Image (tube, rainbow, N blue to C red; front, side):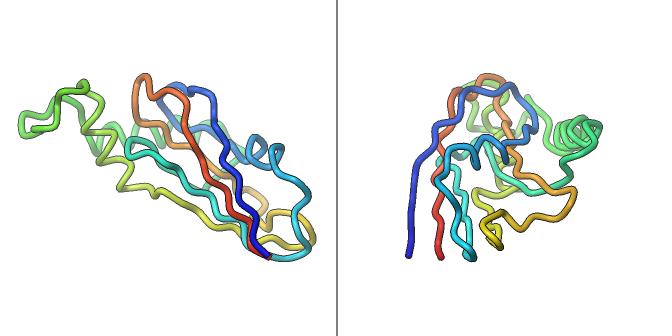
Length: 136
């Protein structure tokens, strides 16, 4: 059996944001076992699973990504949408557009310190659409 919903996330500031609870709160009861697949319908933001306990991780993610992919590089040709746009597309390729998580005992079977991140790479990305598919 497969269920699918689309969730619209509110606008988030540029950075990495834990959205695990926001996703789970909008779902009906999860099946006993299955897979939760989360897909973002945007090319300037991404998804990731990583550390959910220490807020310094968020700071370090931002610092590292901004050092790896800088704004205003002279070789960028896709520049009509602002200095953060092309770097946002590149950063989204470094993360991913989807994550899959096992469901066990009606709960997401994440590791103790894992959470789902929205990786917002635009200064003003706006609301983001997420498609969640549950397969049991």
